[in-house]
Image 1 (cartoon, helix red, strand yellow):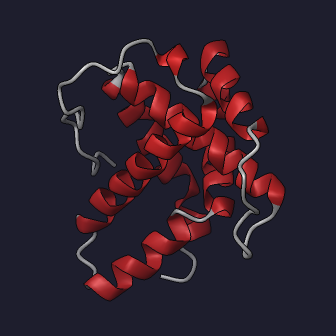
Image 2: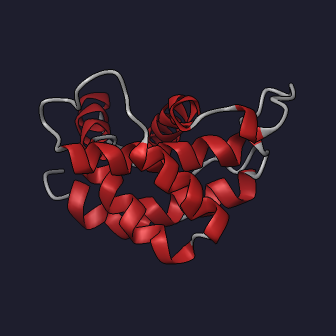
Length: 146
């Protein structure tokens, strides 16, 4: 596929130790990274902006993110799975979005926490590899209504 940005998005400042952030903080950052990767991928698709927006909405949904997490689960290290579990079990102070289940929302938060951890640790090659695999392996799900 290789449609995702290879360059690091890291702004160049140090975040310090990743352990100083809780799972929801990592997911906060990971949510933006997920959106950026999805939009970068879609920009290369040649679609009109409206079509890209509709597809991006499907790709960033909790259900799609749960499927993406399942697609890469066998690739994750024990440490990465630990971050995913912490994200999945984190208690947000709000209800899940109305079009997702609590299980989907928890999995999405776990995936986003993983993205955030990899970014903070400047493991951008690993982030890129997992994100690209997650998108490629779930395209049939979120691309059904293209």
